[in-house]
Image (spheres, one colour):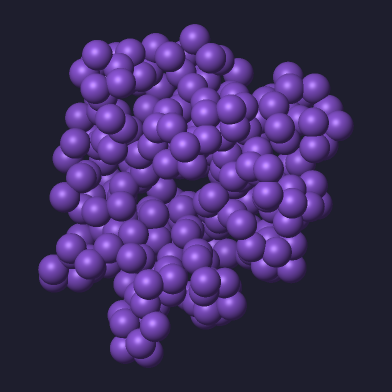
Length: 265
């Protein structure tokens, strides 16, 4: 059985599933996906995520504000994040991190860094792992993780597309490396080369649905059932069976997110 370690169920276009979330979940189950982590990117989404987690026992959630979100006024606070994180199905803090792709000014980047720091502080307070996004900001991302002692709680570098050096620095800070469907893209040679060097016991897989659908569905809407194609590509890359890769990455997921199911493992 597989796990989709990072998706956004509340953003999936349900018109593709007869306007019924049950069909999304059933498709995942039919594809051998035993658990889904639906990740929060804006606090306004959190109530809907709680409802999904309550409705579906195979769904866990996180709480956090994406670094590139500009809809959060006022800024999320440590107190606010820790309060929301008390929900019994909330197993992580994030999606958080740094994203400089559309942000060039020092002032805007500084705002992101302060937001990121507050997420790390909240994660440490509630003893839950972090879900980290980094884009065009790897050096600063690692620097903030170190300065705020993110190693205490660890977590996952989601949809990772940086080089192996950054991956190793993150793993040294107690983080797993999660690979998305990008690894199946024809031109993703550098990502495949990096992914092949990740120790199997530090590897997670994800869809990031509804984004980044893997080949042969590239360019179409993604959903959790398609994580199987990413797993197949990675099993070939590692030279092991799909079953062996599924077993190890699922074990890694439950080790990273130890409070899944409301039980600290």
